[in-house]
Length: 82
Image (cartoon, rainbow, N blue to C red; front, side, top):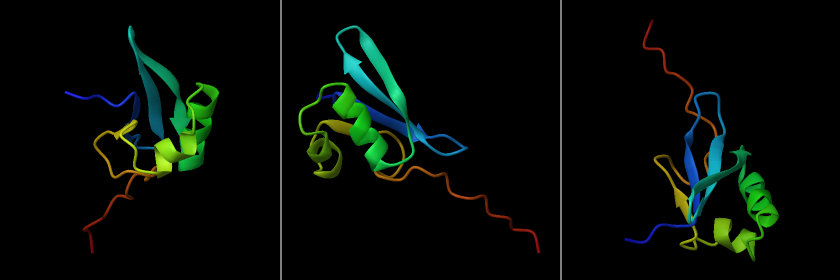
């Protein structure tokens, strides 16, 4: 089973997504992203070649966990009250 080296985790209730890098010894936290630009910057700092392509190009280098890719804000609560 293939595991992407970068994981963009589920959206926090307050917004933003934890980004981690899979290594031989586990997952290294890179930061909390609030945009694709944040993810690209984290990957650039981690030394990934061509981080723009990794995030925006649909490469198999990034796993988007649980939520829609490229979305960083939680859906606002819906009130069914009249």
